[in-house]
Length: 198
Figure 1 (cartoon, rainbow, N blue to C red):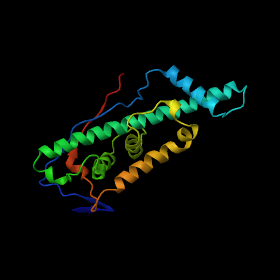
Figure 2: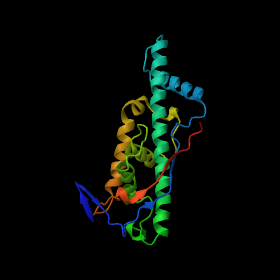
Figure 3: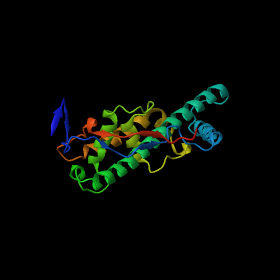
């Protein structure tokens, strides 16, 4: 096991570089009806009594802010969903290659040891367009599907969103049995493909 700084890397047999499946990501938030999202934001503001009556301009600004926060949430969730699917594909790849087969423990999915793939994405300096990958995976571990805006409180979207995602990821990754080992980034390659409709 190689150690670089505070990070330990697993020893990958041989010297060749292994190609992993492509990471397929919808980089733009997939929301079918933006007018419906705007309606939900306005309902949330009215229901939570966030502003006194007669403040239409302030209500519009707050609704747009909530929508922006929600779209960021959806974008993070989509990245997390894509990353978990990519990890499944990587597990299959590792399972079919004799030189990689023993690097993964054979525990049930989603084993926290798979967080080494999330670390690999960071080590490879993948351009996530501002999406925090740990938060993204944490939000996907928390939510099977992205809930509609009406399911959230203003407090969640404005304050708790990042804490929930990061805490969920850290809890999941913290369950990894020792020794915690990362995959050496120079030994693996993969492409990131934008699946958003242009």
